Amino acid sequence: MVGLKPVTAQDTVLDTSNVEHFAKVAHALTVAACLPGDIQAWDEMSSDRIFRHISSGLVMAMVEVMESATTNYTALEQEHFKAIRNMKEAEEKAKNEAEQKAKMEAEVAQLQEKDGWKSALKKADVPSSSNMYIKSNTPIPYPKVGLKESDDEDEDDDDEAEEAEAEQEAQEVDPASPVIGNPPTPNGS
Image (tube, rainbow, N blue to C red; front, top):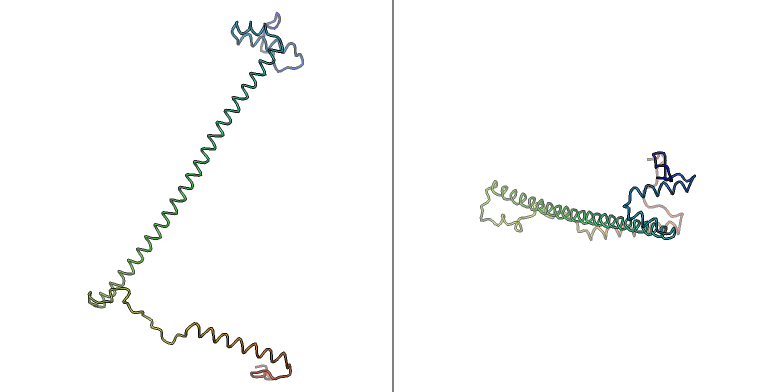
């Protein structure tokens, strides 16, 4: 009851135009929701004490909200770290599987080469006691015929570069000196 009038659906606690009426409606709703002993305790409290009590309740509610947020954040953070850990484990597993696959493919290639070599020797009717079956005793199919050493080629390149530098220096010293080589012909060829 608000004064002598009962609380109706038209009453509100959010209307700030009549603060006294708003306070009475809020008090009436509180009376309806509280036990009689609680109402008597509220009625006996001073306004300052009620304000402190409400403030304390709000702070306690805020603490609960913050604790809940912290708990949720901690759980979310743990879930995040677990996902990262799982991702790293999956990457490591994929890397190991790729390495294993590469090793197995290399082994298969070696076995195929070995089997191919053995079948070629069998087709050529080479006896099984022959040293040809040992890979290290196999002759190289293309002997070194007419190949230059790479060091010789480097020396030839160095000699050619020195000759070209000498010719260029000679032309710089005496521009009227004849150019080595064939002069151009009048018809342009």
